[in-house]
Length: 471
Ligand code: NAD
Image (tube, rainbow, N blue to C red; front, side, top):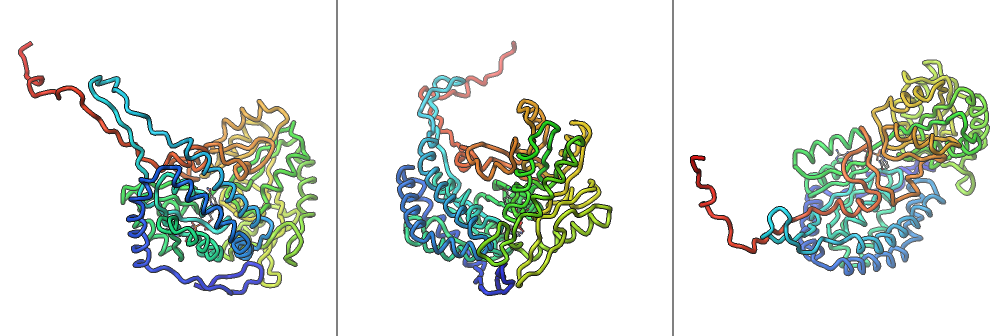
C-alpha cells in the first residue's frame, strides 16, 4: 500500500500488508506463548513492561519523528509519545494493586461448599485502531490487556502506519514481550482477519466499521469493546464566563485540526450572550495560525484525504441550506497538503449534516437557545453519545444539566477533558460505543473472566433427597 504524507500530499511510504496466513500464524504463535504469559505472577509481567518502557524510551525519538510525519503534528506527536510512557508507568503501578482475586471462602448459600475464584484473561485480544492519534489509540488498550495476562494482536490504521517501524523495534528489544505482542500491517482486510482470529476485540474507529465488527463478534460469540465516533455538544449557559467558554470551545473544536473523537462539534449558546460569544470566538478562530511552513503555527493539515472531502461536503451542505460562514470555510490545497482554517458557522440547524453527522475537522457550528430544556433537547438530538461540555459559573447547575445529557463523559467549564483524564471510568452512550470502559480500573479488569472453583467439603447430596412424597 502506498501511504500519503499529509504535509506534501506525496505517497512516499510503502506499507507491506500482512496476508491472512501471516495473521493466522501470528495469532497461533501468540496463543501458544500466552499460555505461559498468563501464568506469570503479575509482578513478573510488570517487570517485562518496565523493560519495554526502557526500550520504548530508547526508540522514542525515532517513533516521535515517524508519528510526526504520519500526523503532520510535531508537538502533539511528542505529547502522544510521552503520554504513552506515562500510561505504561501508570499501569505498572496500578495493575498489581487491582489484580486481587478473592481468597478461598465458604459459600453463604451452600455452607459446605468452599469457593475458590480465579481471574482468567482472554487468550488473544485483537486491537484495531484509527489514524487520528495512531500511537495512543494503538496502545491504550494493549498495555492493560498485556498486564492482565492476555496476548495482543495489534493492527493500527493503514492511513498512519510509519510509527509501527519504531514501535516494532522497541517490542523486539524485549523478547518476552515480542512473543505475546505482535503487530499486523494492513487495512480493512487485515482488520477482518484479526476479528476472525482473536478471542476478544478492542476496536476504536468509526460507527459504521464498529457496527460491522460488532456483528462479526456477535456471530463468533466473542466480546467486542467498541469505542466509536462522536458529535459532542457544548452548552454555554447565560452565566458562563465567555472568555473561558470561547477559549475552551475553540481549543476543543479545532485542536489537532478537530481530528479527535471528543472534539466539541456543535455549540448551543444562551440567546442572551449569543452575539457576544459568536463575536469573541470568531475573532479567536481567525487568529489561529496554520503550520504551513512546518516549523511554526498552531494547527496542522488534515491527515486523511477522504475526511477532507467530507468536511467540505458538510460546509457546502450547511451553506446551501442557509448557514453563514464567519471565518474559514474552505478546504484548500497548500504545497500538496489539505488545509481547513478554523471555520465558524452560524444560522445552522439540525437539518444540516454539520449538526448531525461526525465532522472530524475544525468546524465550529453555533446555534442559540432560549431555554435550558431547549438546549438539552438539541444536545440529545443525536445518534451519538460520546461526551459533552457545559459552561456555567454555577457548578451545581452545570452538573444538573450534564446529568441530563445522554453521553458518557461531561466536561464542565472545559472541553474534551477525557483526553487528559484517564482514571475516570466512562461508558459510551448510544452509537458511540458499547461494553466495559477503557478508562479507570475497568480498563484492566474487563480483560478477565471470573472462574468459580466450587469445592464440596461434605458428602454430596444423593438421589434420596429427590424422593417424591404424597404430602
Ligand atoms: P475506521 O472505522 O475507518 O477504521 C478504524 C480501523 O478499522 C482501521 O485500522 C481500519 O483499517 C480498520 N477496519 C476498517 N474496516 C474494517 C473491518 N471491516 N474489519 C476490521 N477492521 C476494519 O475509522 P478511522 O477513520 O480510522 O477513525 C476515525 C473514527 O474513529 C472516527 O469516527 C472517530 O470518532 C473514531 N474514534 C473514536 C475514539 C473513541 O475513543 N471513541 C477515539 C478516536 C477515534
